[in-house]
Length: 470
Image (cartoon, rainbow, N blue to C red; front, side):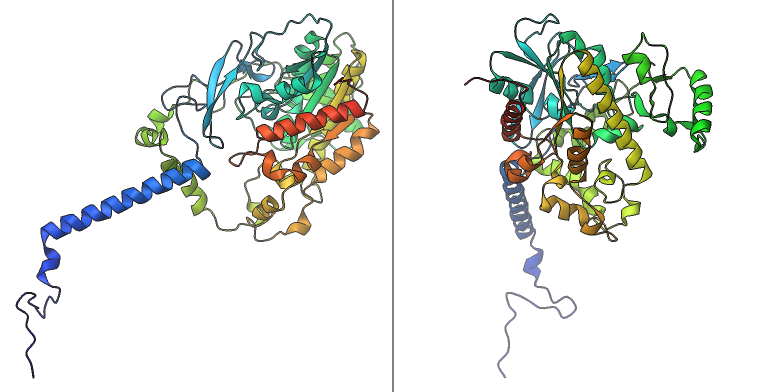
């Protein structure tokens, strides 16, 4: 039998791996090749993310930048909770467009590049109230709904943007009464997004402590106790309770201060936390540490790398990707309003908002102006894809448990009964979904804003509320 030569690669039966695999020079070379390969792959993914799936970067234009807190656009207010900072200039990085957008407030704390006098000239004024959709989250100053409506309505109208990030309908009625009426508007457009229910009537807060609006029958007496269910007992206990509470006031005491003969009943709207000294929540304000202090190493990479940002923000989501029971979810403050059968809590929150709509209507009639509610859908309300993503989170519910357009259906049915004009953007968003929203957050993008402005203008013309001459 011919012998097998092992001259160049001697084989040791105890260690059969050839010696040349332990050559230091080859090992360094292989490690270098591996490192370059990993680097190239990372660069490839970085470029791909920047082009097709940009991430949030913590630069100087992030709300709380990597080094300081100077880019937050709101300040505390003892009545509203927070309000826009007057004479403010800021910026924000927009992942969808991979651009920096500007944010400018005038001296009255409105997101407008021009000053608006309280004294009205010969133009009709259109006042916009709402949350971040009206403020223009992620949009440049020239892309907001106020600017686009101004372009559509023309020189005979003056559109005023009073949108504030995080506001609910309750804060908006205070803002309207205390500030909006000073502009002597002819038309008021109240933009409503589904989370405005909870933003109005729950203790969940955005930037700071805030006033809470609810019907008198929902007053909490402490230790989980509430008033008795008998109407007479509720009113008797409510009167005693209200007299002892300095931080609770009837809404009517604000909007009708000259009328001291208030009728107290189950439908009376009260405001808790008004007026009082508001405080920042633990995510905002001077006590909040910038990223450079909270995560000093990560802050360096999060300023520049989309890949690192993706890993930083998505890792926890991946870890928690297992399905849970719907009853064990962390509510997003909207889900209870897309259920087919409403809980008592959802019904009470809706009831409080409709009472505020009634107050808006009454104030509008007293001041001889037109009041219109604009319904803005969230993505689940108009997209089957997002509905499926939502349902896939839970192991014990399916589509039969939900009615994703229920809010719009209720508004379409209930608001006309109250003689309140309603313009729904649900069909518009449904038909143009891919062009309507940002990919990276729930807000409308510049195309969605423009389409909405055009649609609202046409609806206002059809209803005879505005007259626009071509």
